Image 1 (spheres, rainbow, N blue to C red):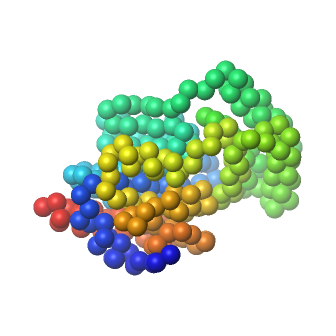
Image 2 (cartoon, rainbow, N blue to C red; image 1 turned 90 degrees about the vertical axis):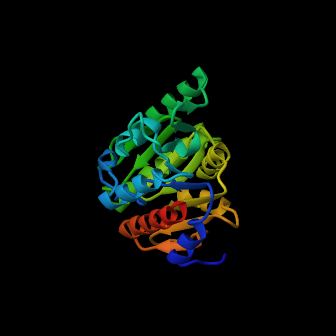
Length: 261
């Protein structure tokens, strides 16, 4: 894959007529927290995101593995916000003027979710600093503050459970998290749906984790992918950290404002 510097990427995206700016949240705009619900955008990232959302022909979306309700809380999203939300890896959406949108769950699907979530909770109940986060279509095993032995045991137990009881569920790993979902949606399908909805001529997608690579790999020749931090990536641009990502977004907002003017 060809690589771009941050200024080259800004120059490519600034003149695009309709631009979709799709951004992961945790680790991209907000530092990761021991308590996931304590996550908030860095002030500089918030300023840059809001500046982009105010520009004509510039659509901003947060694309996250979080459940929609949790994403609304941590992003401090308001009912009058112009920012789209794609939650649960693209299985749930919120669109300005339309509100929430998610494919309906059957009673059987909900019952299976609750049964497997309860089984996972029981499987890790004796492990210190390991906990299960409920998700709309599944659950996540958090081990951020657990030691290596507890983490390995938690993963082994839950993986054995799901291999036996939920073999068709989608498994994802990320920073100190193991997640299972009954839905197969990924951030690549979320970005594709948003692109079609807003008729974007190009897409900027930025993320920091393994779960963002589906979306980064799906981008086309006129799009730009940004990886925040280390790790193997399909992105053409890499920035060091969240402050650098905020600076990139602020530079893009200024460049697009000049073109719009």
